[in-house]
Structures are given as structure tokens and as C-alpha cells.
Image (cartoon, rainbow, N blue to C red; front, side, top):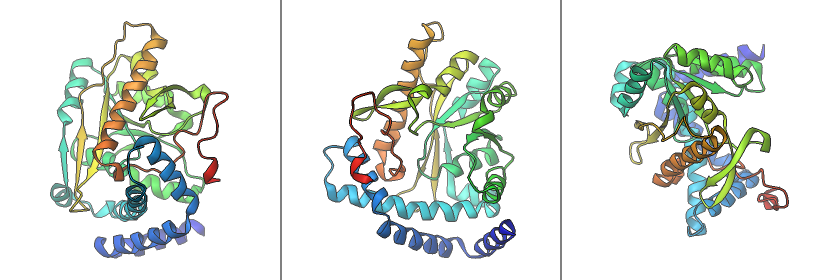
Length: 301
């Protein structure tokens, strides 16, 4: 019954023109911004770490804009079934796809794409899959089974494949060997045993070592992949794929895992510095600390 109601609501939203739907979702997210003091604080704490020279007023503006853009992104995600070839050609530009094609051709195995919660990251995979080739990507299942099934349908609309985080390793290897690029988000906090402590802006952050270990084990490449929203035309985007992140498969493995993980953070940091309002600042990115360090987010409790 719950899933049926969710699907009926989704159909109703799809029937609303994109501009009107976006305005509605943005208004809802503005209301959330006004009420959600905890995550506003987290956003400002993160911005102080990343940009200590930034005025508080600018930080508040960026946090508010992040909430609004979450509404815009949700409206676009709902719109995926209506994103035909003409819509995509008019609203999206792809740069650097040749890096992915070259790496696949030369190595005989697809590369890994490293990205983050930046721009409308859901459209990054959808548009690449619709225009260039289907991709696979790792996701954390949603708590609601009904909602997870509906969201997965949208994510796989262009022929892409969702890989559940809990079954990821073997499926990632299978997809890469089948020459299907796999996308991995690298911008989330992890526990000590799941990552390494490497530089990210002005503080070190525990960062997942998974993408580095996979790349080194399979001798494939890692490429930065980000989607940038046009600052003026909000429904227009540029997908940008970079050359491979430097790595040395012959170096001592654990040392190179740390170096490659750090370089991935550097690529993410470059994208965020280009347009800070496009990253999702509400996640407690620097939450896990070495023993003895204080809780960075204590004031946001």
C-alpha cells in the first residue's frame, strides 16, 4: 500500500512541468533550511574548515543555496523519464569522455570514476549512460524498501546498474572486466578501519581506501568525474571527466593506497573550490578523529 501511494505521488509530480515542480521542491527545501538548525550548523562548521578565510555571511549564503539546490536536484531526478535525446542534447554537455574510452581501450578493462555529492550527481551517471555507455555505481540502500525500489528504477532508467554497497567488491570487478565503468562516491566520512587519514582542505579526514585498493589490484585507472550545474541556467549541466589520477602500481601497496586516496581527495577539493555551493555541506565529513582529538561537531548536537 505504501509503495502504491508513493508511485501515485510520483506520477502526479511527473505531470507537473519541470520549472513549476522545481519551484515547489525548492520552496519545501527553504522551509527545511529555516527549521533545520542542526544541519545549518554542520554546514558552517565544514565551510570554516574548508575556507577559514570565508566571511560568515558568505557561508550562510552557501548553506542556504545548498538546501535550495537539493530541491532543484530532486525535481530533475523525478524528470528522468522525460529526459529524451533532445532534452539531453539541449541541457547537457559532456567533456573528457575520451579519457574513459582511451583507458578502456588501452587496458582492456574499464576504469573507475571517482566522484562525490556534487552538483546533481544522480544525473552524472544517467546522462553518461544515456549518451555514451551504461555504467554501474555503488549505492547505499535506502531504509525504506518501497522508496529504494522506486529510486533504483530511476537510477537504472538509461540501462545503468546499481551495485549495493554490501555486495560491491565482486560485482565491481565483474563490471570492470566487462568494460563497464564503475562510479564510486569518495566524499563520505568512514570509520578508522575502513579508510586512511589523508589531507582534505585544511584538516585530515578519514577517507575510504576502497577505490585505491580496487584500482591497484586490478591495474585499472581512476578518473575524476563531476557534474557542474550552470550558475545562470539552472537546468543546464556540464559533465566533466578528467585524465587518470597518477598512481604507481609498482610502489609498495599500502603506501600507494594512501597516496592515491590523497590524490582522489585533491581532485574532489579542486571541484569544490571551483564552485563551493555545489557540494553537499551537511555531512559530518571530518567526524572520525584520531584518538585524543575533540569532536569537531560538538556545537551541532
